[in-house]
Length: 111
Image (cartoon, rainbow, N blue to C red; front, side, top):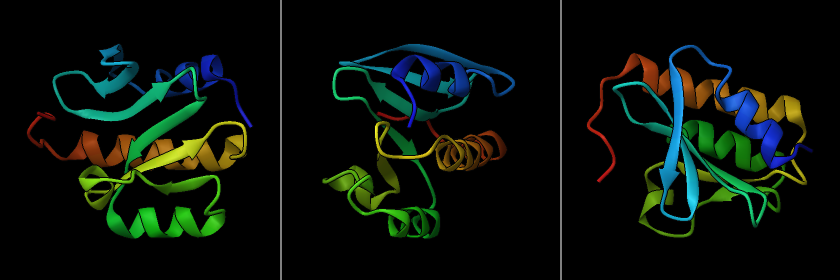
């Protein structure tokens, strides 16, 4: 369980990260690369981009607290984490996975 403020601080603790507005969310990205997480403060949820294998593994932890984004983005690995239900350690592990994958791959930015 983590507050939106703590999530933002945690996401920005990875080297070379920055935040910026992204529609009704705050996006966290590796500088000059793509977004690895977004935060929706009002609903106290965060969306992280994971590999499909990672998404499946994290969703098994608690399907009521961690689940694929219910659209095409979810099919690409974007996964919702309910900040009120997910332990900080699990969230950190997921953030680390999302950050590491984006940081090692030079993918095209999100549309």
